[in-house]
Length: 257
Image 1 (cartoon, rainbow, N blue to C red):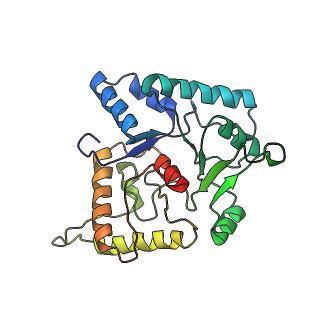
Image 2 (cartoon, rainbow, N blue to C red):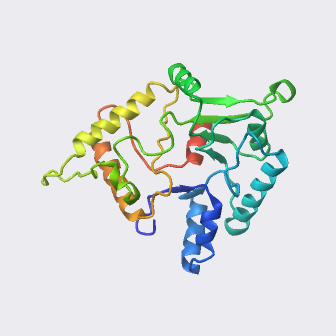
Image 3 (cartoon, helix red, strand yellow):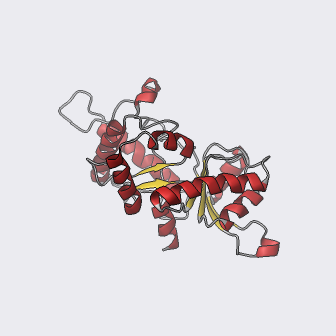
């Protein structure tokens, strides 16, 4: 990210981050603090861990979030805006209400029940306002919900990370002089994928996750591939779709505007 000031990154699991943070050089810490301030690096959810929604008490949920948020405030003067629950199965109204009380503005979900996901995809309601406890609180506790139809990892065919080399996905190659040139084919695949998603959303902006579990250990390779994809696909584009680096907070602000 030092070499590529246009790039952005998001992170959600603080125990892993803190283990790295405690062993990191001071100059890297200062760079990261600057990236957080600039909006290039964003912490999501902010709890010490991603807690289960169905069995913990509300005291445990609050304590978990408080520990994480205190760390982020102390080290970065940062308060998360977006909740990030990618691998949770089942979502409770009480949990969403607690998140709204904590000041989180949006809740991003990687899993819904299959029937619910399919119906929302059909009805163009993958984004919606959740108002838990509406009978008692009206709109006071509302929170924007955004569900990822195909989960929280890369789109199929674009797993570009050394942990996923066995996926069989060929690297994006925009150099037409090489025998491995595939950018036009892959670019059309991605544009068509996003166009299909856009046809099932009511909004102009689509948030596309790019990464997966334990990805970006080789961040240079990931960002180089992303740069190539964004640059080539935006030139190739014939469906009025523009790709760019973004974050959930940017997406939330666009929804407000």
